[in-house]
Length: 603
Image 1: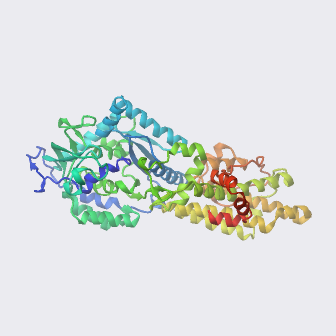
Image 2: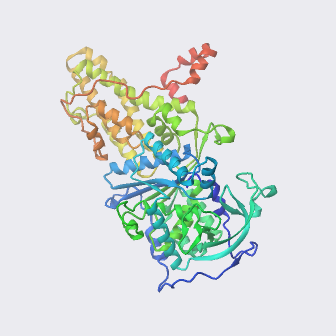
Image 3: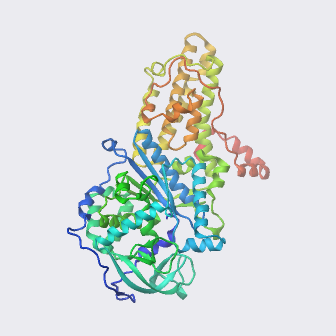
């Protein structure tokens, strides 16, 4: 679904069977039993109110978070990895708060492009979908993605839910049949308005000529829900975030909503229309239902109401901005028609570029996410994109900046602080804490600083300000390094007596801060956080059981034995610096003379 940006134009300029410009004519509406009351759309509008995602009042409700269902015409790309990394961090944070989390991801596996891609690889559509879907599962494992549900739209339970949903919308009088004749882009899987085409009727996205087609399709009466959608957004401004995306959605709706086609007569690889086996359900009317079908248990007979009762409505749909209209306009209207509640929030994040340029195969600058993980590790990849991209806006990847940021933050500020503190503890205290961390920090302003930054991180996580949350945690390590440099415990130990005792307390204070960092940063860097926790003498079970309440000062106790110091994050060598060292040795020597603080600023 997320990779289906090419399909978007269909909804940007949807076919309107009532538009006299199109060579269409209405057929007889489908026969159905009229409802005895109006659709429950209006009554459900108020349920779409999006309370803050960290609101404690909703703690008893499950936190249901979704990524798009990714389109399997090709293997996963960096954009889909970015969405899923962000979703995983949000899910992990809410688990730390003690909430029941249902994190849903999956793959969108129907449509003409899938059949075409399968034929090109001499495989069946089902075989093709199996291979690509598995590539997503493998990548998510490599990226430490802890999802709860992985739904495939070829799953029989999904098909059953889609058919039941379609029938419910049909019985509400919101599906009708109409002929349409126009120019069709096979790659986009959609009809095009002539005004949006290039010369020779070429698609502006794929630069290939569209073909003339005439089809007999079913349409969804989107225009019927114009007022309800306007009221929903007016009453619930948090429904679409960030706020500038809400403005886009409101502008689309004010421009007038038109009915759109929800079936294809010439596409075999799809779910058959319940009342017409000669047509298949259009991929978006199919794929969006994956958010609900994923809630259905495999051991149960698929049932729409039972699936809904297992966690719907979703707390958060996390998507790329290219599919915002599908999720913020069409999906809510579909749910209103079926009498179901609306998701609490739709968050559309930005795009990624590389070295300031749009990524594409034609430019030869695409980034294969598995290569990135194998080269730098999951913690580095996760941290860079969540720390460096202001969530909601576009972001850029540069390998030099990636290496500089990761080295400065994870290897130097956090990793080095832990390593040198444990080294001093081993040398002077036999790796054993001499006092409780709560006692050691009495009257120490550093403790107050840590507590304020922890609270700042909690608020930022809850507001989906992931970059700011990372920054708050990093500030703890920066403050810890400053405290160490000011206190200089290595010198105090040499003095002996009371000075040595004070130095031992200083080490406890720093290690307590490291313990708090491990918990607070675990949504972003789960593997790194576990390595920190393990160095502090805790078991994997204790780390897995940690909650946000463990960020409270006072966890380390007198007598606890720390592990032997071992680097938790290896510094990444920058190949560019190595090349420069060979080609321009004088400049490299000059660069090495820069103070460390200066080098971090330049990163």
